Length: 191
Image 1 (cartoon, rainbow, N blue to C red):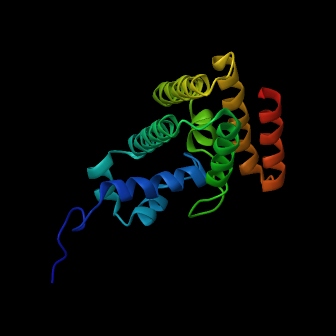
Image 2: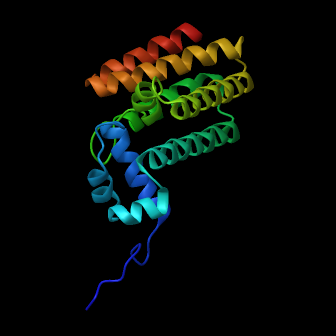
Image 3: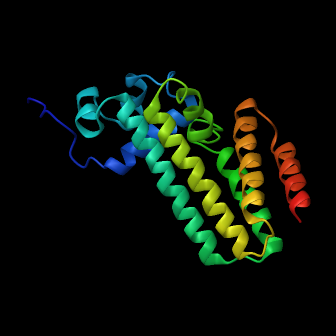
């Protein structure tokens, strides 16, 4: 029997994008091959191209997916309206948990760990990274201001800088206890 061409039945674009995002998060843009992406998504190369375009388009879609997911996380934080004394411990604990997990291994953050490298030579990736960072700073400032932090914009930049450092440290193999200690230091400075 002849196999039909095109995407497999039951193709779930979000599931495929999640799998591709995890690949990029774990291995970076340059080190992730089309064969890696095909294996991770369960799609043949022609189906990947038909669904997402080339590798760069798929990577940009993965960054956009991360952007949307983080926006939803900030929405949930705002809705929770955590008291000041619980807000930063909650943010750092969930961030560390996220960075230390992944289907392939501790991955950190796709934007911080991969887009920062690629942004040097690619203006589209640079624009996506700048938009991601601006969103993080603005949303964190809003969350901190609602919790009563003075100088919320400055505090947000400090918190996000520490979170970005944790993403890099995750990739370097920093143990959880050390990452928790760094987070605790940041919380103490802003208290």
